Length: 145
Image (cartoon, rainbow, N blue to C red; front, side):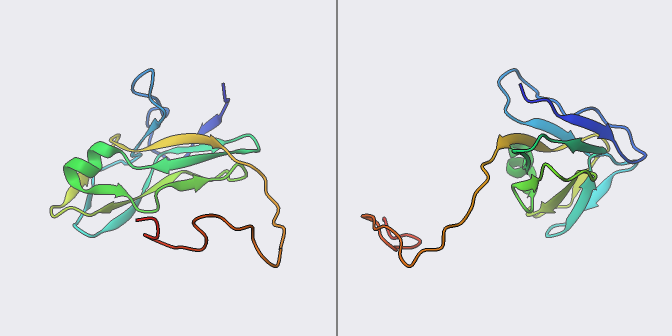
């Protein structure tokens, strides 16, 4: 099991990110707000979560939208998935955007996003004159039908 160190940041207390069911991949992040914030249609805001984390090398945390907010209200994470690198120690914020047609109120403590942990590989680029061929070749968007 991955061990993630977490510390509270800011003045508003919220619950530790948690999974809602045993099989949930994501840990829900809540809005660390003292008062409600309203997102007008088309508006985006950075919403604090009240937490900072420390990840081991070779891991990232991805901030992803909650499907219920997207379906019911058109509210999603703008830079999804947002990446939290293993060397970042600052507060976790979520950039929410309202793609809906009505204002959306973000209430204090509301679940606004989810956090997914993933391993990543270190990589080095080998600059070459040409790449090996494939059946698809250089076909771009929509090239396979």
